[in-house]
Picture 1: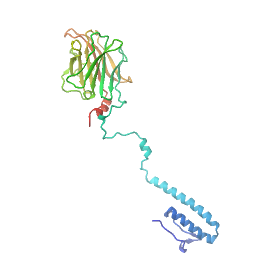
Picture 2: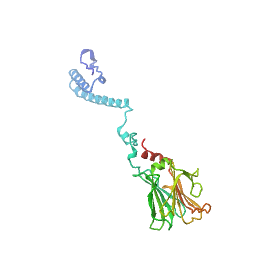
Picture 3: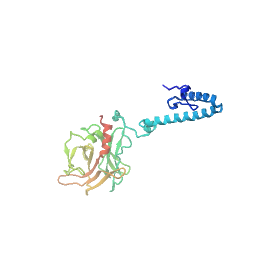
Picture 4: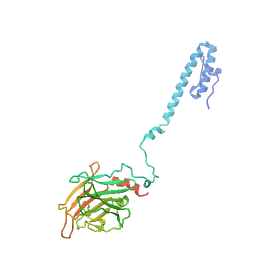
Amino acid sequence: MSKVLRPDAENIDGGFMKYDLETLGTNSRMTTLKNLARHRNCRAGGGFTARLFAAGILLSVGLMGCGSSMQSTQNPSQPDSKTSQDGPPTENPGTDYTKQPVPASVDVTSFISQGSYDKVQVVELDPLRKDLILRLPLGLNQFIVLASGELPNLPGITFATEILPSGQARLSIRIPLKYVLRGVKNLESKKLPNGDPLPGVSSGELPGLALALDSSRKVQMSLYLGADFVGIFVESPFDPVVGLAFPIKNAKGNKYVGLFSMIPAKHEPDFQGGFFISYQLPPEISAVLDKYVFPK
């Protein structure tokens, strides 16, 4: 409650009344100053009124400014709404990311580096269907026929052979991310069909299966799946002769993510040779993709 002072004899000291102006509200201060002006005007003449009233206005405004400044100082922890809104966005813990497409910032695009297939793209991501797509170059291969199908033991994995305008053949395989991120457990671990260890795999083998790409069974494909790892081998009726391996790198060219290998034929056991491609999903990308595939 504001303190109200009256201009009585006890408040007069040498012609001036004593008022505690800081304890009064703004309206009370102005009223008090007017009373003081009228009182002083009676004793000292009317000219004093204007001077005292002007001084009172300055004093009142000054006190109001101090009050506002003090209030701001006393609440330093109060957040600034604009600063908060302009800050980095935070993820909503309750969001179900499995119902959203993978963001464009998650880039798995990769290319062969060096060799005759230098800069050929071999890996990409379908953000809507959440499939990893691998494309294995098969060269000028007259034995590759147009074929497509789905793997019987792994629903959702599809493949198709293509003949490009240049005459080059390639195999494209589409793999749902759930198989890539967690691997598979219902397949027997296998090496290359010739018995050699899988290139770039420390254990030399991974869960895999083999199937014919066409009804003539002239061309066999083997698929290998481990956690964050995919490998594909396709037999070739012609012998690559020399075993060569070229690195596969990410789009920026600063990270090794796989191998493209030519596997020469072996006569014991009877093995025709072929082409092998592998892709290792980087752990930082795997961690992001996981929440877009598997519900928490």
